[in-house]
Structures are given as C-alpha cells and as structure tokens.
Image 1 (spheres, helix red, strand yellow):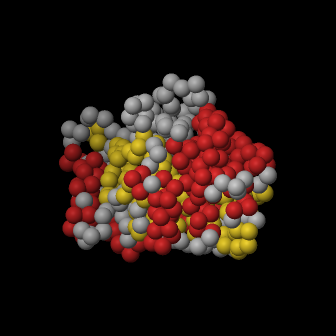
Image 2 (cartoon, rainbow, N blue to C red):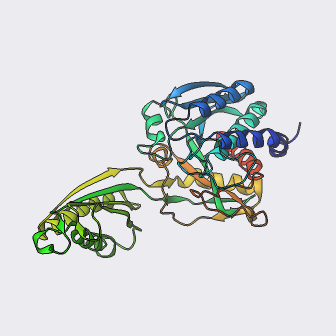
Image 3 (cartoon, rainbow, N blue to C red):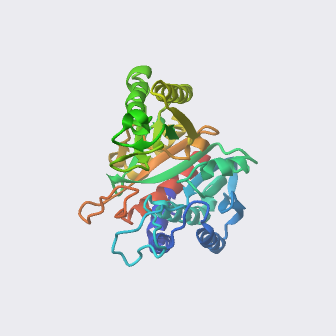
Length: 397
C-alpha cells in the first residue's frame, strides 16, 4: 500500500481529467446567487456517483455531504466551496465559454466546486487511511448579501457535531499555479454597503439661488466623509470608504431634486466598524442640513472581517509544506476584499487559503470579477490533493 501522501498525489493526477470536465461543465452553466438549481443538481449527481451521502436544499440550493473514515476517530473537519456566479458577460473565446447570457464564473467558484468534488473523491478512496468525518459544504450565494454562509449556519451546517475546524479555498490569479497563499490571523475585511439619498430642491441651473442644490451638497458630503478614515480612525486599523456611484437625474441646465450615492466601507475591527457607521450618519446628515437639505442614510451590514485561526492555519501551513514543499507557499498580505466565509470564521476555527491559478506563458493573468478571467486548470490537481491531505492530517491531530 502506497504511503498516504503519494496515494493522494497519484489519485489527484488520475482524477484530473474527470475534474477538468466537471470544472468546464460548471463554467459553461453558471447561475446567479440563490439560483444555483442546475448547479446543485449536478453536484448531487456527482456525490451519488462517488457513493457519498448528503442532504440537499439547505438555504435553498446548498448541499452538505459527509465522508466517514474507516479508522477510529470522532473528530469532524468541514470543507467549503461556493457555487454562485456573477452578472458578467464572458469575453473569453473558449470551447467551454458560458452559455448563460450575462452570467459568468468570473470569481472561480466553478474551480472551487470542481476542486472540492475532486477532494471528496480522493477522501472516499482513501477512507482506510484515516478516521473521523469530513463534512462537505457546497454553499450558495457568496456574492450577494446576506451571504449563503450566514444562511447555512442558520440552518445548522456547523452543528451535530460542531466541526473542529473548517477549510476554505479560493483561486488567486496573482499567484502562480502550483503554489498556495496563506495568512494567519485577520486576513480579509468586513464589507458594508452605504447608500445616501441627498434631498434638496431642484430648478433651473441658471437660478441656483432659488434651489437647494443636492449635487453641491453631495459633493461636500463625499469630501467630508473622508475624514472618517484620515482623522477619526486609528492608523493601526486599515479602513477604506469609497463611493463608486453618484446619480442625479438632472441635466446640464437642470438641478435635480435629489442625488443618490452608493459606496462601501471596509475594515478589520467590529467596534470601529460600528463607530464608523455612526459617523457616516452624523456627518452626512449634518452637512446636508447645514446646506439647507437633508440626507437619508442606509447602511446595509454585510460580511464581518475574516480571521484565520492561528492554530488551524499553522497546521495547514505545515501540511502544505509537506505536500507541496516550502518553496510553493506564499505569505499573503491583508486584503480589503471580503468573503462570506468570514461568518464561519467567527463561529469555529477557520482557515481560508488561496490557490494559485496564474500562468503568464499561457496568458492567464486576468483578475477575478473581469470578463476575461480564467485559470490554469492544472491548479485543480494542487487544490484537490492538498485539501484532502490537509483534512486528513487535521483529523489525526
């Protein structure tokens, strides 16, 4: 019998063609958040083929499967993959290009699902080597609030029993295929949506003295709110407040009645996050009233910051070094991007790592959330094998 690591590596290589086909099928048939019905049905079919028991229909389209090792052990480790796609029209000229108009797996969730299915097949074929239980979580709606993670947690996905830890994998087009990125502790930011409606009094642009100009008020609000980051926040807590959309239904000679602003605030501290929300409301409303108008503030709370458990992530780092070699591990910086995997990380020990998918020679360099995003598909060999190895190693600790 082959040693376990060599067995997993051999299975990863032998399963690659099948998992490649899985990824390409999923890429061709993307579905938006909470609409992943065809995707869910496909995953259920694969789990049945692999002989893995599961429950479906969790948080609408979510799936939870279980694989039990044949050795003694009562520990449970969870593995998560997200399923939804983005409202982007794919610009790649590929034989497996999206067939759903205006929808694309531009964030790599097709690779996450395919990789986890590959991991599941490896674990199912190595059960004689390990004990305990691996819980497979196929999760809807990572891309849209309130986040499928929070919904699945609410339906008991982390209960009966509570897993000792959870691993999540995400593609990284900045990291070369064959490598992984890891960071202990706080890693990704919280994210909240900020919607402002500035109300004034419209009229002819040639008679501004007869108006209360919401365009001017909105401009002052945008500038004034920057002091929240530059003057109210400690420099030790990275924070971003950005507005990406301003809408005023006037024209070159018409001052509108109201202006809408859409933005986001992201940070790494829950206490400061709540205080920043309060300051946004106070400053926006104060500026508007001081200029004769009014401002309605709607802050939709999104995902919390993501924290990688120190012990679990150290364990994963060790497992990755054993499986891939230390030279193939990249140290990650803090990221202002957000992930609903963060909800899991505030409930149980969690480790969220990056799977390198970049291949400059092949021109695979586009960032996620772009119409030309793609992956070096050989990264799937790394992803499925490493995750299986790390899960088995953690069950034995």
